[in-house]
Image (cartoon, rainbow, N blue to C red):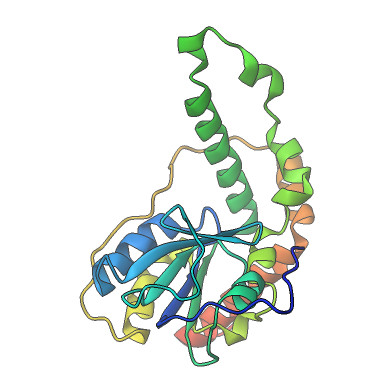
Length: 235
């Protein structure tokens, strides 16, 4: 867990909405929706890596965010955001979640694809990937890969979020969220996911679920809250 100095002065801002992008939970599509709904200059990609802030993939070192920035959306843990940036209790915080097992599998194949693209082995006459790449279950067993949704949202219980969307119900939940935010017009961007069925053994699926017990509990709570929002009985 990263630690910040107590004397650190938090970054001031004009933020009206915080959107936490947990990897492989429809974040890219949703960012495009936000940019269209609020204006492209008002929404910025905002990431926190090892205690350092990146805005639109560039290092940010200032004490105040640009005045036009109203929405931040990106990869950051809620605890880290609160340590670095002034976030009032009245500022709505939203996020999207996904079935934890599906999220891990999707993240693994996404990263494998990125690695293969970056190496371009065939063009270079290399064979590194086959020798060094971890299997799905090896990736899932790594502590860094486990319970990532819980780690991103740690410090703020689900019921405190203004809205938690469920990727499996993306279109319906996007409609509900836009209504909650008072936005009437927005584009119908589709989730950027692969529809190729991945063959994963039942044994591996069970282990991935066990390895992500905190995420499973968090996801089930998010589904329960969604049912309450939709007026659906748990029975």
